[in-house]
Image (cartoon, rainbow, N blue to C red; front, side, top):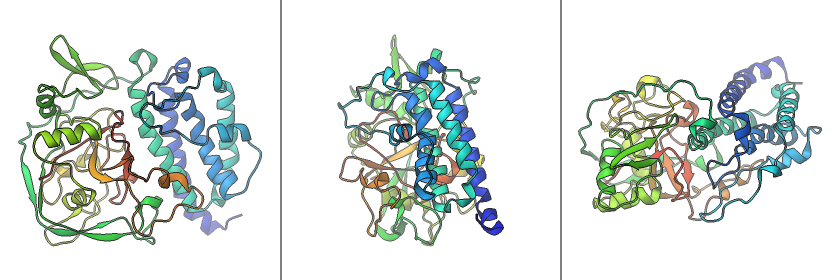
Length: 408
């Protein structure tokens, strides 16, 4: 057994894992049980997969992987081991009847938790971090899967009143040249394999839009003949949007959630482009004196006054509603209220080493088929708002809470 000192060191991680379990348990309770076998996002597994996946992942990484334990249910350990990310047009063909019953899955989940809770203090801290952040990532991805489930299939709390904000005054902000640090040092705390290794990049001067592109701005593009974003609905000449709770009139000052392909087309329509990962870093974390901050607003931890993140809300807020989150250059909401597409193809940094215990986490997504996103959404956990964290999706993936801004 671990010494009292080591157990004390893992206590915050143990509590964080318990808290993350509570977060995902709450999400699954929002789905009517009979609807868990539906597939709201065609490119993803049926929702029942995620019900078993989180516990199977924890067991495979902590119990069977790090601690060499046996004795849960190997067939379910394998069935729920990995999600899917098929190319467009290659959709899964499984049937609801191919999956175990809810009774069997819930029993499996209970056994996994009971066995793991006895040995969490024995687990390596890095593996506990992996389990926590993996679960919190799924708390976000399951949210947008839930978003695409019809309202009558959900048991949602009362809708939050829309957040108000001043009318944004759109303008481009000049960012002076500077050097940015991408990635993180290996002795700087936990990070996923694609966050390493830290390196510096010189960024010439550029201009970036103060706000994310809004629904009002994107609507002008749609009126020229561009396709409407996934969540938009035209109703007798009026535009509406599907929120988590149902349809409402299109909120014009919310950020427009679009695919990378749509964002790139809009930028080109304006004669501009999407920012690179390095340009995003310069605008978000750089300062006039050349130093870099941990967050756009400085080095203080995330707080609700800084933006729309950490599960604060189900839906976006106006792009101008959180001025306390502005960067040193005055660029707004670079963290929260929607991930931001970049022009950077997801690739390994020099010095990349895959996790020995999870070799496919990043490596299977390199190769040019995915683009980097930065920032975070309303459903992104605070621990994932760190400067080095990188998200990625296929360019035509339309379900993520992802917006964008332009540079020139």
